[in-house]
Amino acid sequence: MPPADVLPPESEVPADDPGPLLTSGTSADVYALDDARVLRRYREGRDATPEVALLQHVTAHGFPAPAVLGASGSDIVMERVHGPTLLQALGAGEVSISDAARVLADLHARLHAIPAPPAWVAPSDRDWPVLTGGPVVVHLGLHPGNVILAEPGPALVDWATARSGTPELDVAVTAVMLAEVAVDAGGDYSQAARALLAAFLHASDVSPLAALDDASAMRAVDPALVPGERELVPDAAGLVRTLLELTAG
Ligand SMILES: Nc1ncnc2c1ncn2[C@@H]1O[C@H](COP(=O)(O)OP(=O)(O)O)[C@@H](O)[C@H]1O
Ligand SMILES: [Mg+2]
Image 1 (cartoon, rainbow, N blue to C red):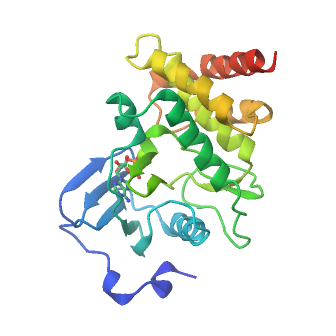
Image 2: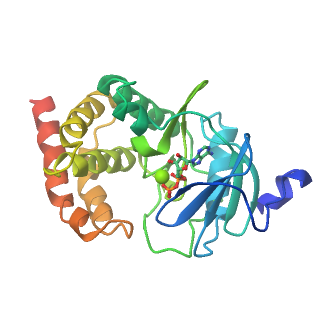
């Protein structure tokens, strides 16, 4: 069912002049429409319909993510979530590493309790990430930059890579993402990322070991990576494996 059919008529997506630009990411721009709403707009005209369907599915299951207020083509109008991202809060020393790890692990656990919508079809207009599917909803980008610490609690944004999959794969993708920062020796956040990764693996109910190879294969072909980042993926996967073995031993 197209989202326009289930949305109230006053939630029309603005054609242009959407207001102040909040951020400009690799594939989408996010505008503040007003205090209550943002517009996420794909620059290359991708179809946001499958993403909107998943977002509506998880919010209907009580998952903390922005409510969809309107959608059309490559535009999503959604509830504006107020608060710093978990990444900003970590950087400012407002959240401890162990609390941040618990937030990430808790969002994974809550998301993976939601069955994949039976009739959902993955977006056909992009070639990454390619998955065979699975029993639950997965986000595949559940990192501190996509978590907003709102007053009622943490909320998860950026559903572009959400699919149906397995909890192990989603946890493994987060682990490899954190490890990529950790193994970037010249990076400012490498030590903090290593500590966050260790705390996340400890806090997670699910072991990502079985899905680690799939996760690193997926990360290595993420079109959003720049060449320098891509080369970090094998070492990142190695670090995750080492930390898991330390925990197991
Ligand atoms: N619903 C929202 N409410 C408030 N801020 C948002 C919302 N969605 C996204 N943002 C902000 O915009 C940033 C980028 O959005 P995101 O969907 O993560 O796109 P991308 O990472 O592809 O650029 C987020 O990190 C967050 O700071
Ligand atoms: Mg993002």
